[in-house]
Every structure is written in structure tokens, then in C-alpha cells.
Amino acid sequence: MPSLYPTFKLPKMALRQRKPTEKTYKQAPMFDYDTGDFVRDGANRIVMADGKEAYMEWCLKQCVTERGTKLAYSDKLGVEIVKATTGASDPAAVQSDIERTITEAIMANPATEYVRDFSFSWDGGDSLAVSFKVKGKEWDEETLQAVY
Image: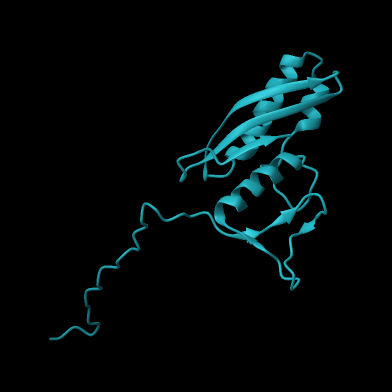
């Protein structure tokens, strides 16, 4: 007697293979930190940054956002610069805390390969300039050398 519920074999799904040269970094609107607004062209349209530029802007945004101060962001986003600079009086401890918090913030993105080569420049004890290098996973060269 034939089956009341016939069966059939499903064809195998062909998964899209990503080419090694294909970038997974997505475009995003460019942001101008001096004006505090998105960059616009002559027709008042928002200018889009390519994937690499958008990734660099994301890294910068991580470094200028204090963790836990924005309700829209999770606690994984941003840095703890206030805590790092007020927690210790020893300059080496402050530098270590800043290096840790910046590294944690940028490594939260799975597209980040590494954050390293930190250098610190104290200016009279009241201000500190921090520079470091960031490399995304899919580029051969370092993508960002930031001064903070």
C-alpha cells in the first residue's frame, strides 16, 4: 500500500563562498567630530564612508565614549578613562589602565585583529596624549594610528 505521507529528498543548499579578497566591513555614514554632525555633500545628502574608514571611525568612537554613560550603548562599548585617570596616582598604573580599557573597547569588535604599540606623552602632569595602532583582520597593514 502506498504511503499516505510521501517523502522526497531535499537538494543540498549551496552556501555562498566568500572570496578571500572580499571585505566584510560595511559602509557607514561619515561623522565629523569637530561639528558633531554627519558629513554632508553639496546636495545635503549624508556622505558614506567605505568599510575601512567606517571601521576607523568606530574605533575612534569607542575611544571618545565613556563606558556606562550612554543608555543606548551596552556596557561593552566605550572606555573607562575617568576611572583609569582618577584611580591611581602612579603614572605607570594610569598608563596601564588606559592601555587595558582601550584594548578591551576596540577588541569588542570581532573584526579587530590587534591593538598595540601604545605610547604615552605627559604634558606637565595635567594632560596625557596616547597613541596606538589598530589592525583589522582582513587588511595587511595597520588601519589606524590614533592619538587620543
